[in-house]
Length: 458
Image (cartoon, rainbow, N blue to C red; front, side, top):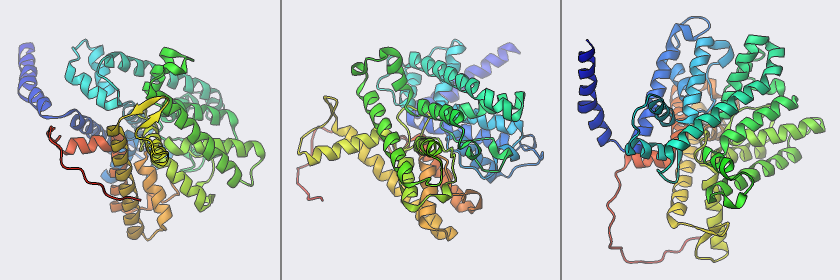
């Protein structure tokens, strides 16, 4: 029997796995791995054991939840706390954890733990998965990601435990602490606060400074990226030795937290006490780009505040992080490119370094794709559902940025609109260039170049 199993394993490896591996690019493997995880999660969530009522969940509802969890978005059609059983919530949490850290990262960790050899093909795929600058040291970086994630998530759970154990009981409080810690660090936005009021997110803790601060710290640590944390762990306070990407990510993230927070404080939340107003403003600025938790009723915000939130959601988190979206580095490169044009310089510069033209072109392509998908999808949903355009744009921005915030229309959407949101969530988590590179073959490089002719713009 043992010999038969070994022969079957060798046959699968030589006749199926290796040929398929050779025919697939790293980008295609990343997409297929996420799709496979979504399919498994959908099938598990459809089982009666996954729901509190012990009934079968429809395929569309289960798939929407699986896509949202795997793509760490947080948009839901069933309240996580009141509809799903403990088993269903556990499935959702596992999907969040694997989706946030990356399917390839988890797979590589399993291979390393089992003692299997990690070849160049695996390292190259991992490099593309986490946007690492080089293949060298990728296995060490994987170990760092797993170790850092475990430490931060457990620390977050321990910090939340005193409050949640007091409010929900010891064992239930521990589960709530772990669930919200992982959800916040992975920038997923799933919550279990529906036991108090369905779809309420963290509004019941809107004035609780301690819970807000812990959740914000978890969101920020997960959203700035593992490559940045690797630099922080290596160089500590020696900021000058950080890579250019880490410097750009940290500075851009700080600006995108402070400036919107100032706006929210000055123009929103007028009826709140001063302390609660500061807390809500900072929390909204932090969570809007990546996480999807909300501590105040979003439907009470005016149109200008909603528009700013859409802008922040489209930017998203940072490269190599648990968050999705266009990414902070992309936004920074586009801003620097504009400054270069205005100042009539030849090269895009930052921190006394030159940014390549290829990077600038890629950033422009990403912006174009995000804007087209975001706006076109919003128009389609608005016409299909007969809803205000700004409300639908908020929903599509939340989906493509894998944020998870909503103005309360997700559960009322038709199958067509839900399908559009699922595609946007998948697009936002996997990444624009990953999908393009997986779908289109690389063009042959040529030494010859076409004649140059200028065209007027602006």
